[in-house]
Length: 76
Image (cartoon, rainbow, N blue to C red; front, side, top):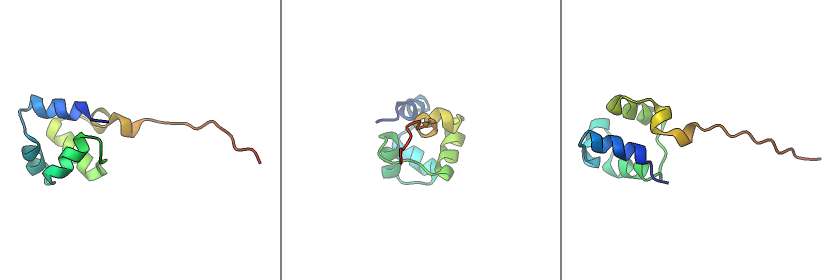
């Protein structure tokens, strides 16, 4: 699932994936994988995205912060 919000913020700042990668100190391939939802960033990388886009991680990566409560019980 593509992370459209990341792509939109990058385009708002008129940045290429290469420019984002250089600004964050990560590879362009990793930026592409994160934007495409193929890879999940670690906490350090999330903080770098927060600083670059001036948005919090919950907004940039909402699917990583969703709470799922499993209420199904296992019977013995």
